[in-house]
Structures are given as C-alpha cells and as structure tokens.
Image 1 (cartoon, rainbow, N blue to C red):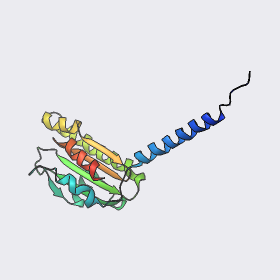
Image 2 (cartoon, rainbow, N blue to C red; image 1 turned 30 degrees about the horizontal axis):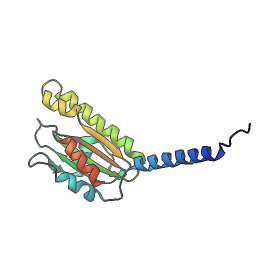
Image 3 (cartoon, helix red, strand yellow; image 1 turned 180 degrees about the horizontal axis):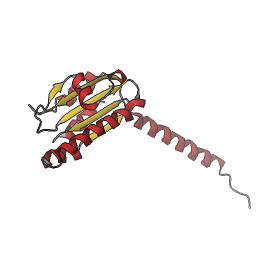
Image 4 (cartoon, one colour; image 1 turned 135 degrees about the vertical axis):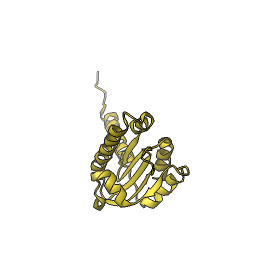
Amino acid sequence: MKPKNYLVPELLLVAALLGFIVWICILNSGGTQKSIEEVSAPVCLVLTDGQMNKKTNTDAIKSFGIDLDKTEGLVYYANDSVMDVSEMLIVKLVSADDAQEFRTAIQNRVTDQENLYKNYAPDQYALLEDCIIKTSGNTVFYCTAKNADELYEAYKKAL
C-alpha cells in the first residue's frame, strides 16, 4: 500500500492559517489616519445638552497628567459640577506605542475618582465602575457617563 501524499493539503492549511493570522493582526491594529476633529465630531453629536462641556488641553493635562507632546490632538469634555463624574477623553497619539501609558494615566484618574465618590455618591461611583477605556492603535477613548456605550459606538463608527 502506498502512503498518501499530504504535502499539498498541509501547505494549503499552513498558508490559510498564516493568512488568517495576518488578517486578525490587521483588524486589531486599529487606529486612524483621520484628524482628532474628524474622530470626535460624530461623538460630540451624541452628547446631550448640558451633559458635559468642552475643556482645554490644560484641563486634560491637569486631570490626567498626560504628556501633550505624545499626542497629535485630544478632545476633553467634563461636567462642571463636582457632584457629576461625567467626562470623556479622546486622544490621537503620535505613536501607538504610547497607548498603554495613556491607559494607565486614565485608569489612575478613575481610581482617584472612585476613592473620592465611593462612600458618599454611590450613583457616581457606579458610573466610574462602568467607565469605558479603549485603545485602537493610535487612539485612546475614555468615557464615564450614563450614555457611555452610545458615545463609544459613535467613536468606533468615526474611526
């Protein structure tokens, strides 16, 4: 009995597997070539009246302790009331390699806020627990709000 030649099917399977891996890597690299204005504009349309107000880059640096030199631009919205933790930050980075640094800065901000609100504002603490922090290549999205999911969906579509 002659052994069957499995070389061709094996090579096809390996090629298919490599193609699949490359495809997954491309999908997960994310990011965008769009400007921060192009990414943030559709997201800002989802904000409800009075929900949050646009803040300056200086406000973002003060709140998050981020390095503005590592960004191509950012958009920061926050509520002016000390009793409302609602805020949203969208950052376009110069290099996707800095995404983890920005995620850490955001997480530190959330942890500090949680420590402040934990014992006397349980509804605000719950918003902080459900906050969204996502990176996609060279962009970082953070939102703490009642409609954070809607804002995040608008962000994903804008990318």
